[in-house]
Amino acid sequence: MKPENEALVQFPSLSANEALARQIAAAFAAQMDPTLEELGDVKTAVSEAVTNAIVHAYPDRIGPVSLRLRRLPGNVLELTVKDKGLGIADVAKAREPLFTTGGAERSGMGITIMESFMNSFSLRSTPGKGTVVRMRKKLQGRGGAE
Image (tube, rainbow, N blue to C red; front, side, top):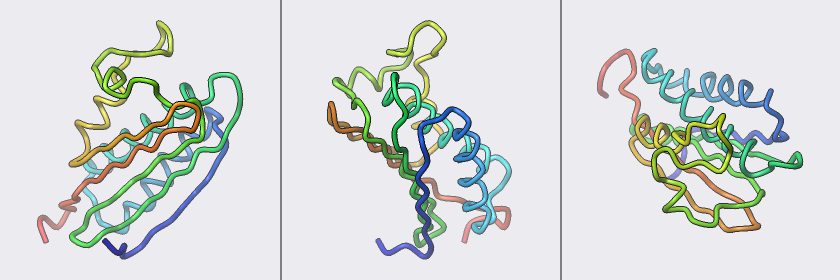
């Protein structure tokens, strides 16, 4: 599907860049006239995906994280977060609510939250090569359905 608009941003896996990614996603989504609830969903999903890349993909080093944003026909927002980190050995297990490899301070709900806030969600990962999270959300916008 050919995008109507798109952007690609790459940043290091520093915790401060989670907030940057949220704001970039919000600014990009603004062109689609989202409701405040839709905007909150987008920001939360991006936050979870980027936080997972920062915490789990690069636990002992700084590495690249990319955020790709695409406006697709029908007022659909596509968000892709990609890293080149450790990868996920067992994707099915990682998708289980409350499962985490991040220690006691992590809730294990990141993937569940992303899935619940988006209309579609996919997760591809290869151990030693990285992870790609792709999410889509149809935005009704403040003007209602198109």
